[in-house]
Length: 186
Image 1 (cartoon, one colour):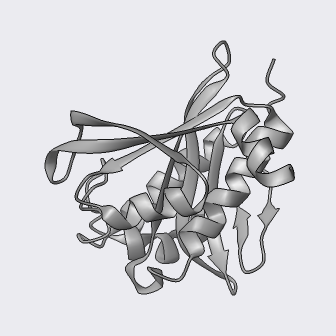
Image 2 (image 1 turned 90 degrees about the vertical axis):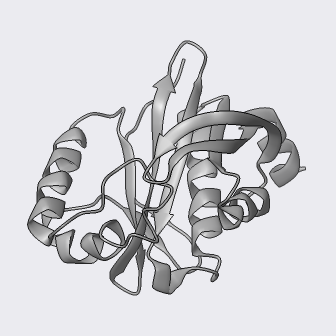
């Protein structure tokens, strides 16, 4: 049985992972409106910050549920990205992770730091048994994030998902609670 707690604030060495609020719209708009950032994402590029504010209000409403795991990645009081756990399956005790970082903050280890914090929270606090993630084979940087965070490459899937660039072949990653504990606490 999972111990759902929802989106709780998480702190790392450099980051604060926290809920996203409507007043964060201008910061969130910076990455959700960038075609390069959104290239492999499923959402359409945001056209203005009012649209982004509406999106946040939907997410904010979901925070009422302890089953919602959606964080803004804050660096020095500024949101630079987001990370989420979706498709939580209580029976199989597994879920899917996704993340996105504003282009100006790429290649600084922020995504890896956020992924590690969320993995720890989900395995240790929530009790999930398995977390999966995937990325387009064309988005090699995302694969490096997952590998640095300790996730294991499990396979290659043809036309695995549809995004702004069309159907994408993807690399699939996974990590189980027992592997996480062995690698981090032994």
